[in-house]
Length: 413
Image (cartoon, rainbow, N blue to C red; front, side):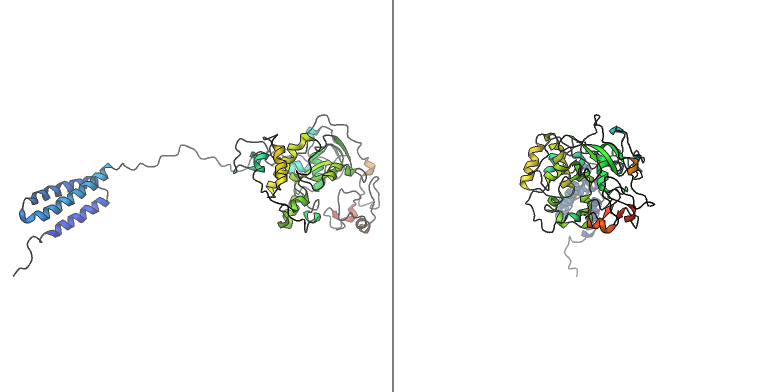
């Protein structure tokens, strides 16, 4: 006896057809889906007129409607376009940096031409590839330092209180103890070569040791004659624009020895200036001291801003406000670079003082006991240390090669 209900038989093909419809939909064949939907719909409608097949016909019509909707959606979808080729050519990457013009080293001589345009200093040669400080319209926070004005960079400096001076030691900054640019010339003579005009050099030093020159003093606006000697060298001193103790109290306490030495000998933070004015400034910041020559206020503050930004040093509120007041009068003032002298070259350089006579050349190893007129004389390292001049370096007053046993240019170490 057959107990199966009539009408159940034959559902298998329709189920298979439904699965095929779904698979075809997954293949994105819109035309096939529409065709199947029409055929299935017509058959379903026909079955609706058969009483025993109405349920089956209703299922087919429903299936046809779903297939028709899916197929129509597939047909209406826009064809995917291949990505358009970029019309912007990629920036060409140079295979090698363009060679910079070589700066000839000064010839060994006792008298140079007074024309500043033809002079070349050792420090300038080492810094010839420093970026220009010319301002640029792009002054966003991501712009390079040389493309921003001093007033823009001032806004980036952290403002907070001065820390204690505990642990400060000027010698930790190793001023003149390291040759940062590795040109064989100590830091003081590097700066003198950069900032003085109408220079003369001691023969046999490769244009390093400056004997005489004229300084267009940025602090006073006056010309100052430099003559190397025990009673005259101090007329021109090298100023740390951001004083070492000021740096110590505003972020330098956490530096390692290498960073302290880099800061202490960085040409960006060094200027040849009037000795008395340098002593007057002491360790003051912009809130407590500005140069007497008001025309130099903007370049002076810009240099302090550049140094503090380069080394992540902070400023006090009073210092920040003083800097802002100065820079408000020169909003386009650019940041300086370490290769720039304190004052631009001049054509009206006064007559320099007489050069040191050739007879006053430093003693040679063959005459270790010779004394140089106008300079201190030390018979041995004991006298150098007793005078507080140790370690003594090539070019220092009283220097003699006999103090330098290892030939590194530093004696009585």
